[in-house]
Length: 472
Ligand code: 6PG
Image 1 (tube, protein in one colour):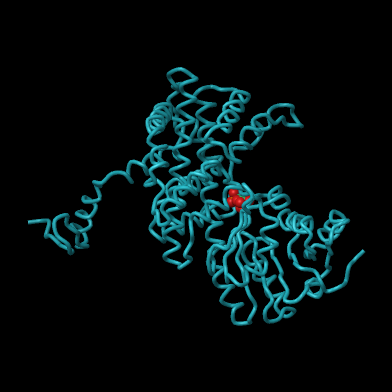
Image 2 (cartoon, protein in one colour):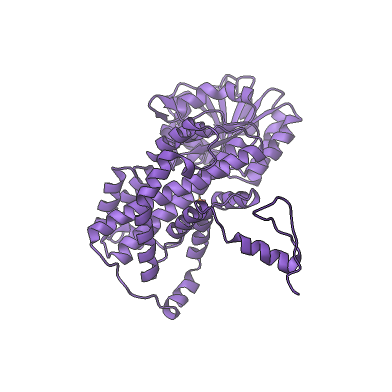
């Protein structure tokens, strides 16, 4: 039965996987929700699935808005990009001053700023909110990263705190900052997600082509690692993947899946933003590049016949090599988080988000795709030093990386020798070596720039800029 009373607490536009599950999550926590989708079958599906809950399907935007308690709160979970603008345009004629629009999709942060500015002129509040956790997270408890006016957030805080994942009683949601703070943090979350997935894929390759492990052995290794300091959602699902059978062939499903990884763009935006802010994030950049490389299937096919790789198997005891691999992965993951958090620190200053990175680490501990035990250490690092610029300068985390650096070196060396690509591990090691080197060969780059372009250079002994006539 449709409840036509205009008293629903939240409206949802977009009933795809994330939208539908968030509606069910909110309703299961006692909130009344009205949902609309431009495809009527999705509205009907929601009506069926939400039977017994205080949920109402609307057949038009106008009907949806009419169902909401004033001041209204309308959440959007539609594909990032022009669809968000078009839904906002459709909503505007029906909304009034004081109403609130919440964009909970993976919007590009600069679009969020533009939309916030436009809506501010109409007196309508706007929150840009990152939501992570996929289908299961949306239904049972995601990590939620809200940005925008704090007063607007306060209005929906009880809903968000109820539906978010909880870790040790703490909800994985907290207001992060003004403007696009929430969407920027979600974008960097995804950049880290890309990098960690790439690193795990490389260790799989090294286990498979380097050590010659079977899928069962790979499964065992990942599930063993997941029970220790590498414990994380991504390792957990990885271990499950290697045990999954293909219903069609009866073989392991992983071997039936094409080695091509596409993207929706959030990882690429992270790299672009990092370059604009001049923050080095090579592991993330590399993860984006390797997805692009994976798509070049016919070229890779041709090159595999032309550019033969040295067939050298890993040398050494298999058990020891697995220990080295585990250590290499762990240290590279810490180095990846260091890059992502350093990017957030720089963006916080540049875009005046005033982010508290301890809060970011705290709300990433549950619900989201990159949730990991390591986030407890990261949180502790920011609790110890709120303005920490790089996690590798934290005493605890730096010690953990140092304890594994030999393993990372050994693994990268073996990968190079056997021609198995492990570029994520390699650039992570190079980042570490570059970051901790007080001396840098960039003196030569300064000299070269000054030589060919009179770009001037700085000196070690006195401040200022200098130019030399390099040729007699
Ligand atoms: C999440 C995920 C989610 C989505 C990515 C996938 O946090 O729940 O990150 O946002 O799975 O957008 O991104 P790609 O399609 O670019 O890999």
